[in-house]
Image (cartoon, rainbow, N blue to C red; front, side, top):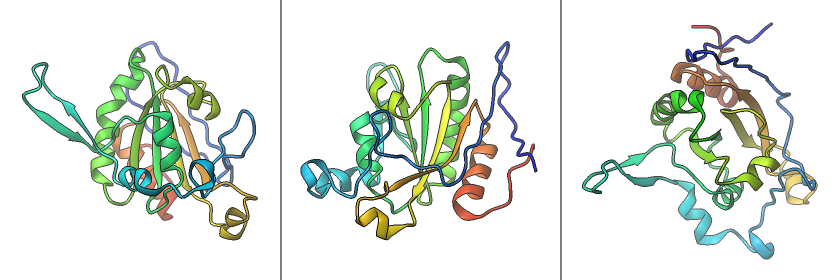
Length: 199
């Protein structure tokens, strides 16, 4: 059965969607992402990780800084993302984007709305591929926007022994999606919901 999703309308852009095997995982290789159960130098992630667990960023909504709003899908650094990959209270969706990317800009409000709808169930973060080229390369980001749907590796024995990574890539989508489709993919991938369809 083919999975079909509705894309945001983007003039003169060819959008592709690619799904990966649900068991594809981050592997500790020179070009891959290494995620372990421990923080730097083998220690626990500690307070830094706890502060990232419910990561929200305050941004200035006006040039003069007079008002602020809390983002449900904050922008994070590569270091913050790696710490988040060690926290598995809830699944994680990463939006790899660039500020010059038209489809990325069109999808940004849709991604934020999906984050608000699934708040408390799924964590949503954004990573600017221009500001974070190292982690973007390690994640294999080749097209923009790219959505990574990450879950906890259920093989806890292998994770504890250091034989398997904590983070498992459940789904990877290249292209701009509407809010409904982002939510539908999350429900399908993380909560055994119905398979997403064109809608």
